[in-house]
Length: 262
Image (cartoon, rainbow, N blue to C red; front, side, top):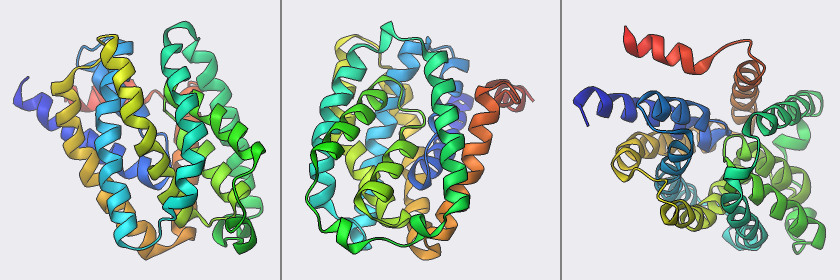
């Protein structure tokens, strides 16, 4: 691994960790960089899980330190999500990634309008929902979210946020804390699946993690300091960029390559 590759991985990791912690979809950058550096798509997908795992250790620790993490509720939501994530990871090689990305882009577009149309649902929590036990419906929902997270991960943060905010009654800041907690629980399980299949480059993954951790720590602090409204606008901006990429309006991978080549 050259010095240039190390610098590229750390800088891209910083962006990915920041975006993933505040919103989601940052993996579009890390996957593009890993493939640009020569890793096959499936190995890039597995390698990215190393950085995701370590990134969320840092993010969860930061949110917990700032006393905004409801780990009890997060644990119960993580159970079905983790089961689903294992299934998603095992069947990853058999699904059409392009079709799924477009479906997720459509869901993200709908989610963006919901955030803008009724912002109070995202900015203020509902105490009565937070105090309720996890329902059968929530178990099923988070099971299917876990399947997608195990398959690709890119964009799964939006689905988790929607389930935690609209279904469990948390504001965006506390929902982000639970989101990274759930991902932290399923991340090592998924990583083992990719390791078993020999689809992880540990050297690239660990270097990428350096940037991811830094980005996650910055983002978690900003989320608590700036509040839910700040998080909402970050999500909207990232959603717009992701949708534009998925539907071919911009090519993030080519843009990154052009910057690097310069």
